[in-house]
Length: 157
Image 1 (tube, helix red, strand yellow):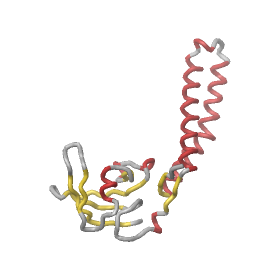
Image 2 (cartoon, one colour):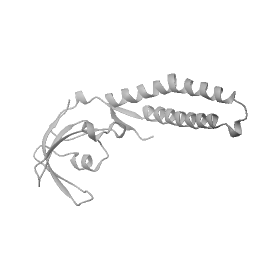
Image 3 (cartoon, one colour):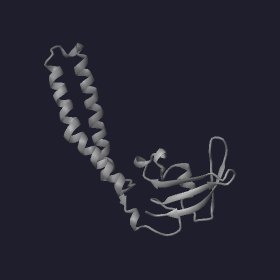
Image 4 (cartoon, helix red, strand yellow):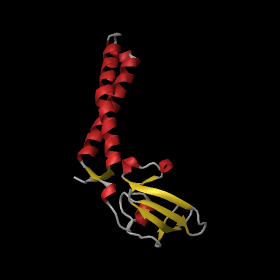
């Protein structure tokens, strides 16, 4: 069983989603199925089929979240430190060619959100940065060709 790295924040978000699915969404869809069933012939009952489809999606997501939470390897980023880039690090990098700076936090796959500056530990940029230190350069394969980035700052917060 492969462990899934995630921050405590990401773990809490998945738990919250699971709680909503189990305590709000599941009972709601059961009621909707019951209501649709009362309308008669199920073979031509669009409400019933839509509700069953939604139920299938909800149950699938519940199973997926249960599995991820069971395999979660929760990493407390506040207890990490050092100068090397690892999971949980907030890294400021600069494009070697353009000198544009960007800051990313390396997180688990389910937490990744580029708009919030969070990139997955499995992303090409994160994989290139892992193990680097301030001042090191990392080369990232991009669709337009390889890009080189310099690690400006590594922080664990």
